Length: 90
Image (cartoon, rainbow, N blue to C red; front, side, top):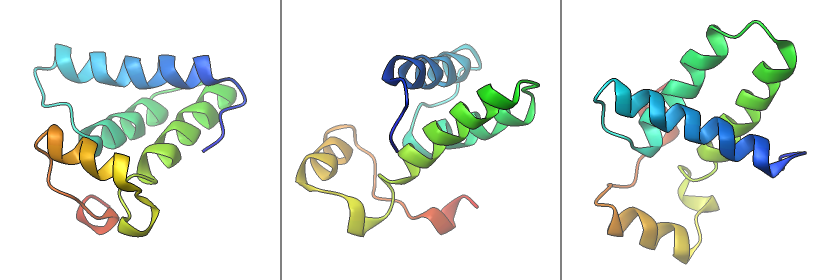
């Protein structure tokens, strides 16, 4: 994903993480993607829905094995997350 404004993307991802934390849910790649979906469903602004969609698409890029590079795999291992596939949460 290419955010037209990286700061906006980081804010949206942070908001999703905070929502999960307040709900005492585990913060994982898959839970963040799901939370962004919930946020988009409840959003009224078309511009913000598009921004949330961009953030989701960017995160989804970390799920497919073919798109991961070594640093991404190391991040998954260090955080204790097993590699997942897009089909697991559609």
